[in-house]
Image 1 (cartoon, helix red, strand yellow):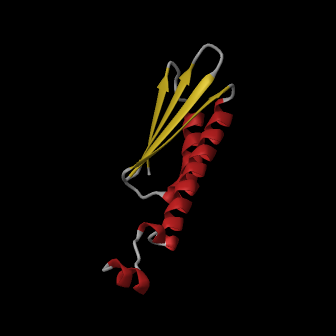
Image 2 (cartoon, rainbow, N blue to C red):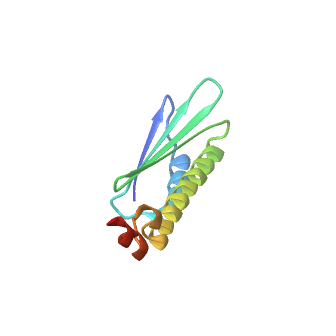
Amino acid sequence: MKIDLTGLHTGVTEAIKEFTEKKVEKLAKFFDEATICHVTFSVDKEKQHVDIRIEYKSTTYLANEDCEDLYYGIEKVIEKIESQIRKSKSIIEKKRREGIDEGNTYKLNIDEILNEDK
């Protein structure tokens, strides 16, 4: 997974970079090598803001968090992304398990076919 770190109105220190890379590596099990992860840090007057965007195949996962502590914000954003991934994965598995919805197919029984001619 490729990680892109950006700081808006703030610098990205080595400690923040290492911490972010360590936390994002938890998500690597869900993605392949070509996946791009954009992490943006910004500072407004009193609050710090963390955004994360992961682009994987045709899906984009987004999460953001306003916080006072940047490390706490990074952890919360990673939790949100994990939740989104697990939810989308369960939806895909459910569709695969259930197959085609029978309510969408039209079935005729023998009586309906015979009465159709009358």
